[in-house]
Image 1 (spheres, rainbow, N blue to C red):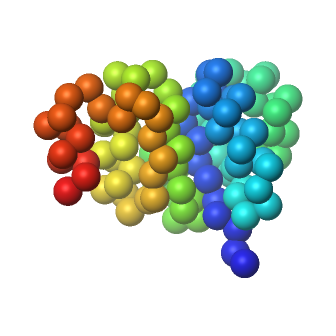
Image 2 (cartoon, rainbow, N blue to C red; image 1 turned 90 degrees about the horizontal axis):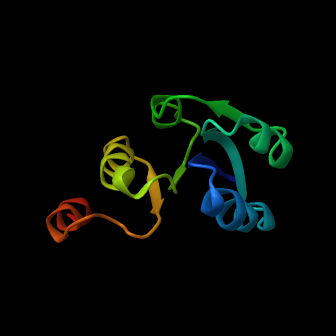
Image 3 (cartoon, rainbow, N blue to C red; image 1 turned 180 degrees about the vertical axis):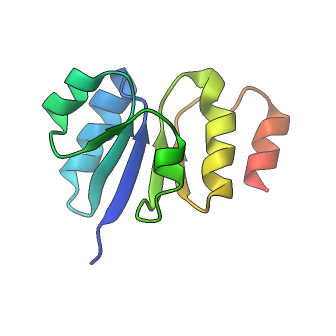
Length: 108
């Protein structure tokens, strides 16, 4: 089975503890890129992962299959929309969006 290549946005508590742990526990996923300023923490937890400083590095990479969004809540809608428009599969943390209009737009 082909591995699912992951781009992780955010490496705070949720990205570092929950998402990274779950993704590393399953052989079907490989975290290829992380967007975060927490360089030393990423290098310690994911030494073979590329650290990027802009979302385009993840969204424009044709090898990235799945984008996991776990940055600040106020960025979820915009980043989720960008990832979906880039043709990526997306996992987004709660809160999914700030209002129902944004949620309905992303779902459609």
